[in-house]
Length: 416
Image (cartoon, rainbow, N blue to C red):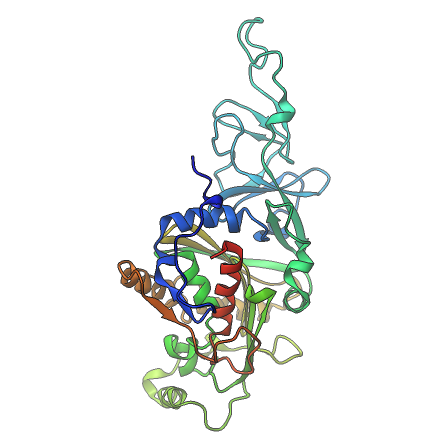
């Protein structure tokens, strides 16, 4: 079997900077395979769980690092572990029911049994039956533990990496990205619900979409119609980690007098009777944080997203499935000290997001529009020049700086 991490990328990048992206990066299966080794099993931190999903000793959750299935467990001492969800014997998945509580990890196929840290504890019939058969005398259980990842927990977010070269998580995030996570996850939370959806597109198209801060006023008409998030509001884009991470933000109620031509049209739509809400409590909100920011989308390379849309808070994990398919998991949360009224308002606002969300439904299909169109467009490239050509902070969200940053970081890690 070829080690795809050693295969040089055959894709030719059309420019030295990140203002052009060849469409082959979304359709090349060899590149996809190489990403799994170089990116996801390389020196990156990957979000795998919230610590409150596994609160008690013996709790576990199935998750993913790239397309590698993993198990996240809490042992009897309270330590969190992450390991490949694959028995060392014949490769069967150990857990396939999502989450639960267990004393150990026992493979259903041949009953190899591991502790919650992934150490092999016993092998069925290791000594045979009546001293006949069994494993050879030199069989060493310690050489057949589960493959473990390093784990760090930051403000309740559990991250894992398979590489010894990955820097400490706080260093990987950088001060500004870490500070924003601390801003949102500032006290104990409670999970309100979860969604998942299949995206019929390459995983990088969704991450582009997350980092593209100006499409919201154009693609998501619900936003502009009801003035939830408009480009005339005060806002900006922060880019960190050599472009790998980004944060876009805005403050509702800070619209400039003029706005853009598109937003003027949106404002007119909002005044029409056809575009009123029969139940305005759907978007009723309160000011969540003292800084006045009402909308923020943060991404941590490669596949983690932290969201604030009004009072709708969520984390998202994007899982690559194949070169042209991915799966998006949402975990919607509030705070443990929310009042009953705040809890109810968060539940109502959760209708804004998810597979059929009023302001995220379009994101589920737009990647497929691209995937279908670029399959045979070898030699052609996307153009990323909105807001200039640089990868740097922006005082406006009318910019593709975050998208350029993603590709700058991607190329550096993939060496293409």
